[in-house]
Length: 141
Image (cartoon, rainbow, N blue to C red; front, top):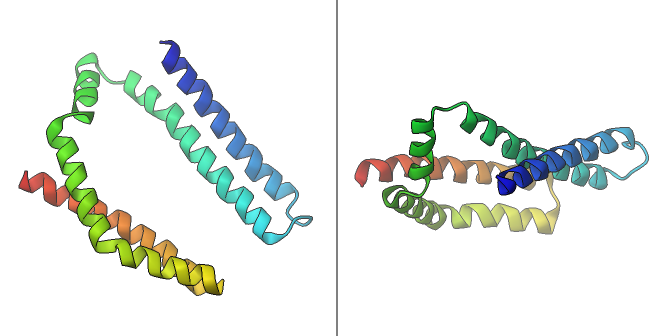
């Protein structure tokens, strides 16, 4: 119980810090360079997302019946599910490694907006490919 409470407090602090960073970036927008504003908004969004998720998941788990909760906890560590995740991650990593790194390295070297957008799109495609592989390996195993 103490560990769960600590996770909730940490999640609330992450969400609050994320909102505070985004708020400061919006208030100080004219006085800071654009790259600093982008960094503050990016870190704030990441902190807010992780903190909000850490708060939301326990609330959703509490709304489940005890049988559903036990099934969800057991399914998280089931050997078949872990094997499916490993196979899908390996396949996704193998096929999208160059697709992820080439635009990212070019974006770092050139600083061009086009390559930054392409590298962001490559990350999205990698995640979509991972989800497709999860479904594929789920059918196979």
